[in-house]
Image (tube, rainbow, N blue to C red; front, side, top):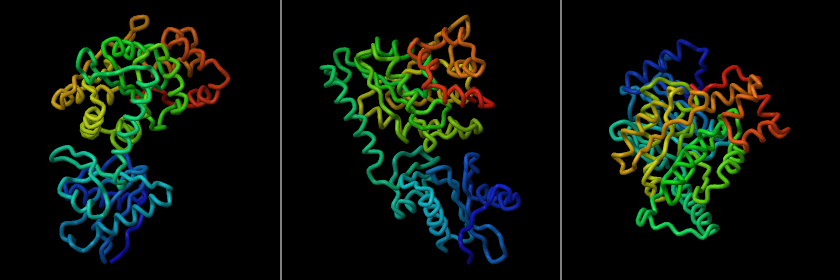
Length: 360
């Protein structure tokens, strides 16, 4: 029996066999893959496959006629070797609920599951728990630094959350934070830490810190790999069909509910989304799922400028076109000062060189 070998996207015939095997086993080929491998039988037919996207393993299938031959074990071993070569030690995977036990025996730990659809696992036994602990420690340090005491939802002590990419931080983002800050005792602001945006994480974080400095009850967290990341929600960063996006959104929100429980979060604030299809779909799933998980989803109308809702996409377009006059209507002064500074030259050049600056 052959060993697992890489299948290149240019090998159309092999990729068709991979896709056919996945479909035969009731699995959809993920569009967001950067490595695929397969095992062939003695006649060259693909009988087992698995794929990667960054540090996430997905799209596993073994021909049902070859079950019990240890093929999936060999596919997993091959993919883990690839991840090791990439320098990825913290690994995630999606699998069907029926396969979760198998991966548990291989040293993976369940983080969350979407009933009857998928299970999300990682190879670090305490990865998610350590992330929750970090959020709690950051919150405690924030409260102590400001002499605040939050009574966990009683006596007006409501705790809320906002998740944003802030690519970059706009007046619309600030408007959302301001409303949440005004209506709650404490607001957890989770900044997406995936570096998949035109504005790097360090810049986005600095813009938020300066833009919310006058709010005394907003604690900023880097989100880590468990909130809208390429592991939990790749559709946010890379185009995919609506069915896949909805599935990723449901998984991401299942994880968010666990984070909310650890931090006593009872509300999540989100801005209306008139432009981005994937964010609009995510908001739709949020409005349906969060109340079932005991979390209020509060949708806030977008702040507008000159009759048009403010969006980070428009900000990036203005930077690309060097339209500084319009830009000052869209971003806080703290963001505008940064964008005009020599320190932002690299970011401005990156945006100027980008073919597309609007979020899909």
